[in-house]
Structures are given as structure tokens and as C-alpha cells.
Length: 168
Image (cartoon, rainbow, N blue to C red):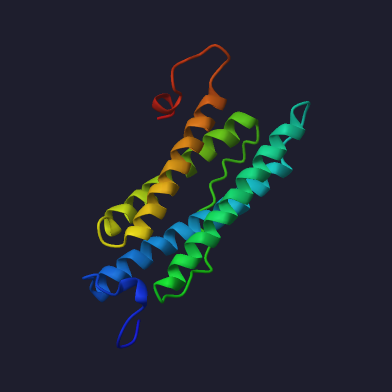
């Protein structure tokens, strides 16, 4: 994968080809999930109707753009490690229910899946590839904040309890 010397990022880091392959595999799964986010949020934006359409569509476009940015960052990491970024798109959840609550519940589920992938990445690189470790931590931070925001959006006005535990 890297040739005789390997990329400068890995100099002085004790990592086998198997370790690097595991990292790249997780990065490609993350990339596919982020591509799916771009498609999913854009698709959702087409399906919003009613008085609240403009701010909701704007928020969905922001989420699609954020997924695209994350995909670009992950793709750069994959090529930094000397590997080929996936062209596949991850699973696209679609309940075919297009009220805002259904869209947000699907979004929360997808964010949870992405969060699990970023945590898997962190476990693989922690203490070994510090820059990639910091990237994983930043993405976990962003995904946790986003999931918390969606959780709040799903609550009824005045309700304090998180919906995440009730989604089962």
C-alpha cells in the first residue's frame, strides 16, 4: 500500500499494514455514511411543505453541506494514508414518511450510526496517529452536538426529557 518507506505521516509510528488497512476500512465506511448524508438531507429538503418550509429547508441544506465537508475531510485522510477513497454511498434510510418528525427521527438514527463509526476510528488511532485522533475527536464532538440538536427539535414545547431514550 505504501511502498518501501511509507508516507511521512506514519514515520516513527509502529503500525502494521493490517492496522492501516483497518483504519482505511473504517474511514471508507465513514466516507460512505457522509455521502449518504449529502443525498439524504438534500432529498429531505425536497419533501418539506407548509409554513415552516423555508427555515427547515435551509437547515437541511446546511446539514447536506456539513456532510459534504466531512466527506471531503475523510477522503483527504484516506489518500493521506495512501489508499483509495470509496465511491459507494452508505445506506439511505427512508421510511417514506415525510413529516418533519419522521425526517428528524431518521436523521437522529443516521447521526447515531455515524457517531459509532467515528468512535470506532478513534479507538483504532488513539495514541498512535495524533492528527487523525484529533480529527476523530472533532467529528465525534460535531456529531454529538448535532444529535443533541435534533433530539431537542423532536421534543414537544416545554418537554425537557430527551427523546433519544424513547425512540427504541
